[in-house]
Length: 414
Image 1 (cartoon, rainbow, N blue to C red):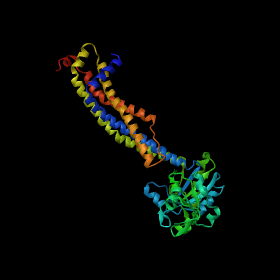
Image 2: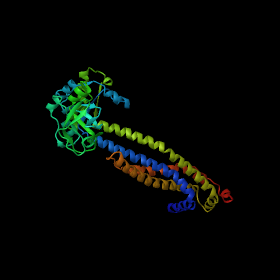
Image 3: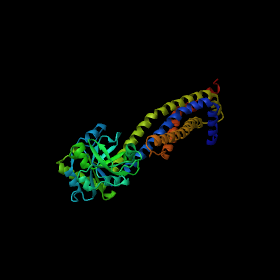
Image 4: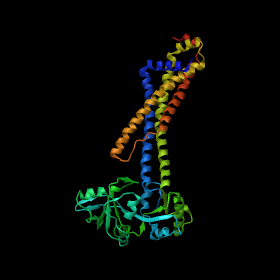
């Protein structure tokens, strides 16, 4: 029997029992749609995060205080680590220690509010070089300028603010030269950042930049840094530069065992690889959980096919009596099972893609403006492959049962 004829018979059998076929397809449809959504949203999240990290610059290496975090609580403890100090910055700036370092700039993180005449806002406050940060994050100054290296050395109380900070505190009035309150001190605004949005986990519109020396002396009361950013001369020497940084700091801190480092070095490429691994693992885990629905759907397919075999026993006997082989009977019922699951898979892929697109629109509107819809072609191939496999696995037993029926007993079945 030709395969085309087998398809016609399989389609006719599915069409005759529309309600039963629909309920069978539904289980497969739900499972595939859920998996497609997991893959699509996981891919969208990966693109968003990697895009944010890439905004930090491929040549930038972050040296963080404390041991490398192994959990969320470790990030908080790193803020209290005093392992990175001015002497470390000076050592990293020496060409003899780190020959490919183009720039070395320290950073401190400041928590607190910024206020002006009764208006209060809670931005992200960074102590560092405004010139370095605006250039690294590719965010130009809209009005005014940045504070100078001389003002950093003099511990000047000056600030550069983001666009949203300006709107929240001042509205549309003039800002330059006015003083905002940070902690117990007033800071004169010397510059306003152009509207930028999210860049490498920083919302530049919600950022306030002050000199790190001022933050250390007047607000935090510390003599150490939370982070030191090193810019390599090119992407090609990032790994070598990271290795030179580690060797220099270990020697300076008297560390022989890398497991006892009181700092950790992160490169953009390293962060990208870690995040790709985490997201891929999480997506695979969630997809495997959702795949339980496919097993349930597969059991439904097996159940329906067993009922179909029973109902068509006389037909099986008749076909065997006129020369159909066991292989042809097996092929016929397997084809029906695969066709059932494939229809469910196809609808599930379309439904999953549509829902993923709608969720992406919501995410872009209310959560992350840079979120984009992603639906990898590999996900479509995966969906169709899985549904076909489910049809083969769960349709095999009913098909074999049909193929092994005795033609005499089948013809006499009432």
